[in-house]
Length: 616
Image (cartoon, rainbow, N blue to C red; front, side, top):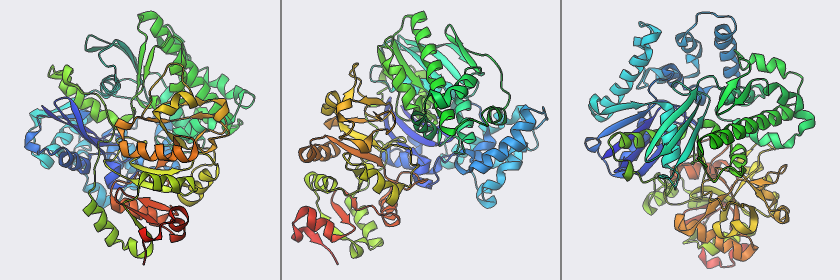
């Protein structure tokens, strides 16, 4: 059975699942180059078909994530194209009149106000544009049905697949299935929690997974934790649906002294009652109402108060459910599950036996959940192969890379090292140079895990300064992260439960004695790290590079950040990699068979083997 999974929400993507095994995933942003792209992912669909070697006629089921949703937002690509100013305008011109003044506006009015963010011609070419023409003449009650009809028509035009083979799955169900079926110990009983800004009909759920089935035992559409985090992000002048992680990263810089009043306010919104999260008060508008209350509070104190409140609610909620149901394994999914500090707190709970959060647990994995749901619907749950790897994207051969290098005439401008070894690359990093690595199949998800990564020395804060000044231009408070040999985990991290975290989904405390030794990969305020724990079987080439660096430095750790410029999607192709190299001051661009070095002095100094260098 071959299933094409599609998510057209923000972080839209496509995947192929063959007989339960996930064989290809592609995010639309990697191909369109529009970060957080949303809408019908036709480029990604074409890409995963090519990667998997599947033709449209071989597809048995097309599985869409989301049975409802705001189709207008897919058209004006809100989460991708809205600036902070546009988000505030929408709050002022649409949400405030609707929520606080009870004006009878609809999503159509929001679309009319917002459509200018997208080029008019580009909008009319959108595969979903027919929705606009039909929705204008229809009742809002018909929009969901019309939207799904337009989605089916897009697939029919694109792939020639009959509508009876296209299915729609509830947004929340896709989250919970992705979370549970990506768990290496799926099959064991678990409590599955989802929490997010909003799904088809809920913002938080609790389910019990046992005997191969997942049964929802509670849901609520009034839990506002995800939406609250979104709009506090906006209140702090950051971009919602993309920059929540910056609020999380800011929080540890403050303390109770500056955040106490913010925390006290947040505590008036929800409380945990037994196994449920209940409202203490209903805040109709989460931007203006919250902004006015927090108007005199320090920005970092607001972040601290929000993060502390989120952790309090989640921990109490999870513990109460564990005690009630007597199930001690926890799977966490949905947008809020991308909060790595909250995940750390949940993992550390003594009541939790096993804690799991999958990579890209937000909407960027919904299509995978939908594809696995289609398999479950066919009674083939036992075939689902989980997520043994995230290297599920495109791979470029030597010929394609050489053609790109020639096209950009890169070898005319920079020194060339053929067949660079792990030892040579490790030596460059040891000498303080920044290396951009483009190798093998691209990673699935928001985290670069070695194949589309920028690497640097973790032992000096100069690495952070260099990357920020030359390449990333990141906010000053945001830390960088490490890739770490699995054999180093016990030595370096506080990890009493021996958790294996290969996807950078959770924070850990670095042991005190290593804080000064690895300043470039810790959070400066709370001394935590968000590691990629790496076993050799997961990525032999990358493992060998880090192992070679350990021989030089004493640490099987490198700084690893995604290979992209600030605000861009992670590079997908050799052309993307080269353009990023040319637009930045990356020292070395590394492919498997060749490295391009910005200055031959670097190579001469590090390698001391001039005959290996080709320069013009």
